[in-house]
Amino acid sequence: MNYRPLESLEDLILESLNPRAIRERFGLPHPLSKFAANGMVKEGPYGEAILEFIKDWTCEAPESARHRAAMWFLFQSERAFFVACSEVGIDAEKLRSHLLRMQAGRA
Image (cartoon, rainbow, N blue to C red; front, side, top):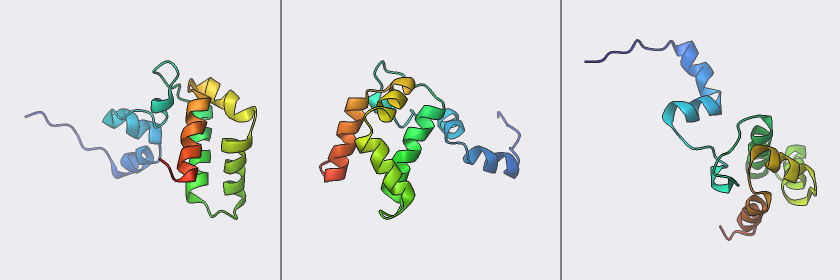
């Protein structure tokens, strides 16, 4: 049999706090890969910011500042959203259209 040494609990907890490490460990695609312009999403702060705004839009209370900021970024921004999407390598129009369908309840 092939035995691997067990990772320490501290290492496992730290790794669980890093979504990228979890994706790499289990071979999962990037959450935005469905919207990739060239089939590949670049990891980094822009992608993390987009995911954080999506999370804030879906999970935060509608009256919260984080929810309002996410709504502005995802649906009203005429530049920031498109720059971030470009940096990540995703099709901004495709992502925004998807989010608008989700918002309208037509996913």
